[in-house]
Amino acid sequence: MSSAPDSRLSAGGLRTRVGRALYFVGAALVALAAWLFVPRESRGGTPITVCVVDTSASALRVRPNWKRDLPGELDARAERARERGSDFAVLTFGADVRRVFGPASPDEYVGRDHALVSSDDAASPLARALDVARDMALAPGRSDASVILFVDGTWTGADPRPRIAELAGSGVNVEIVELLPSELVDVAIERIELPRSIETGAPLVAR
Image (cartoon, rainbow, N blue to C red; front, top):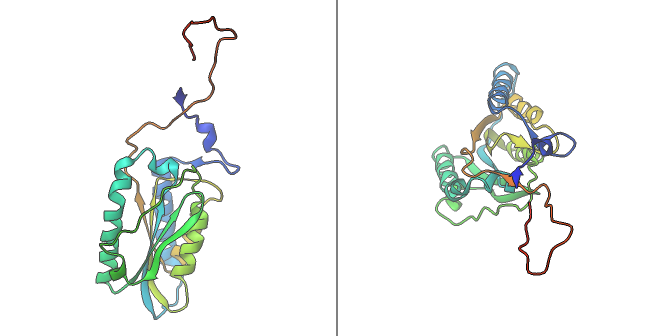
């Protein structure tokens, strides 16, 4: 048994890992620059808060406490949305992008059991989740939209950073909430070696 190799995180549909500081600082700076300097027309309508949560196996299996605490964190975000008169929505992504709640009144979310089903797949298609969030945030009749990303800084498939910049450039407030540090070590079995022959009654030794 050995630590899972980083080669599985390379491009070409496999998980891509960037330096944690570079990812979050870079994405935040791009989003801030786009929000500050790109001309935008104000839109009247109902505000909306969209939470986008990575529930892939690769994000949650090493963070058992985060999986436990996440519903309370989303309740708190729904409370804030209620205070500012905003609609609320929750998207999760693992093997697929799922709409868990809304868009609807946060009153319908707070304090209720909204099970966040974790995926058995390690895939994290953040870019696809952002496409769904964008459609909600920029739908006709919306204004003052916020998209909150609960992510660990990794993804599979397309690079999500251009989509983050696009959202910010459209006037959407983008917030990145980094998941808690890993509590468990993520390991994988690369291969099992067995002896070519085994004597009757001898112990089986694998390495």
